[in-house]
Every structure is written in C-alpha cells, then in structure tokens.
Image (cartoon, rainbow, N blue to C red; front, top):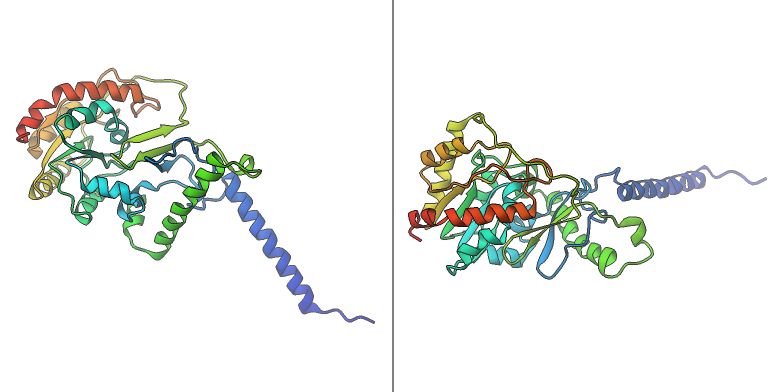
Length: 324
C-alpha cells in the first residue's frame, strides 16, 4: 500500500498556487486592473524618436516619468540642455502645452537665446525651485505661467521622486528600462504578443532638446471655448509672498522673472495683473478670451500657437524691463 506524502502534496499545491498568482497578477497588469507603476504597454508608442521620450501617460498603471527625467537624471540629454538654457519656462499642464508652441519660443530664439520648457503636469513652484537649486540653473530669463503657480507646494509625483526612497528609485529605473521595450515591441519590432499587450492610451512626449511637449492619441471630439474665472483664489496673500520669494531666487542667480497667464477656467486675468504688480515682475498680459480647449481647460495645439503669437507681440516690454 502506497503511503500518502503530505509534504509532497503541499509543495504541489503551493507551486500551482504560485503559478496561478503570477498569472493573475500579470493578467491584471495587462488589462489595467492592477497599477504596477511601470506598465507602459497600453500607452501610445507613436511619439518616440531620437528627440522625444515619453513624459506622461493617461494610463494609471504608468503615470509619470517627466519628474524623474529631470530630478533623477533619467534623461541626461534633457538635463544638459536645461542647464544650458538661457530661457526656462515653468508652470503646470497648461504651461506644458502653451510654452511648447513655436510662436512662444521664436522671439527668444531669434535673439540668440536657448529655450527649455521645464513645465511639469500638475505641478507647482516647489518642485521647480528644487530643480533650479539641485541643477544649479542660472537662466537669464524665467517665464512662469502664473495661474496660481506660487503655492510653495509640490504634487504627489514630485514628492515621491524627491523622497530618495529606494523603492522609488527602483520604480523609475524599471520605467526607464521598460520604455525601451515599449518602443521596440509596440512600434519598431512588433511581435506575436504586441496585439495582446500594446494599446493607444493618450501619451505626452517631451523633447530632449528644448522640453517641448508632443501629445499623441488624445480625444478630438469637441473643442469648447474657455471662459476665464471671475473670482479670486484663496490665499492670495500667500501666493504673492511665495511669488516674491521665487523672484528673489531667480534674481540671486542672475536672472529675471517674467509672468504670464495661459488661458484657463481657473485664472482671473485681473487677479493675475494685481498679483504680478505685487510680486514686482513684468507681466506679458495676453487676453484670455475666445480660446478653444480639447478638454475644457487646456489649449489645443493650434490654439496654443495662436496664443503664442499674441504672447510674442506683447513680449518686448517685459524683455525691456528685464534689460533684454
């Protein structure tokens, strides 16, 4: 009579259980039920080039990379060009799009000034200040989208990246490596698994040369016209005080702070004018009415170019105030 071996059966049970768990986790990552923080394969691969790397993706399983590109030096060419820039643009997601317009960059570049758009999606002034200090940036001009940017605050992605925690460092090391696989498997060298794992979620790519953004595969169903806010933000005195501190930091590094306001439903143009005067920085005051948005609060690319033309026309007095 053969005796049952309970240890052997337990090993078999645990072994198959482990296999089932791995398959379940892999399946969840592939179909989006599990946020792995580095699963990039559902993001659109259409923007990759020698110039552009993926900065963000609308898939929560990947999320943000643009913070680490600068802070953790994951994109050395981008960091080098940021350090060499004469003009640095800063702000949130609206600034990412608006300051990527050729019409915005052209008046500076025509004067021989190298530009870099270091705006970060969903970010405020504290991360920008930390990057300036860490990289010892000393641009001649800093142009900020002042739609209440000066909160002395940093968003969740920024806090994680600057934390220095080993697991965060590992996460972004995995992201930097998986981006190469994403480009190869989903665009350059599709294989039999590509149809199963690759998707077309909206993604935003950033230029290693000048930081400009390239957004691919976003919805184009409607283009509502934005109406600027009419109220006043909470804590305006705090915003002004923080803006003054930011201006002093820029000036201590030999630069000049220029403010503007990209059209949005959150910024009141009159408040921005008062804020700029209180901070003591020149304002490129561009009318905010009549611009279309792809989502209700961010300019379309053609509208960003149109706004950029108006920005360029109104820029000379601010440059003169900065001695340029």
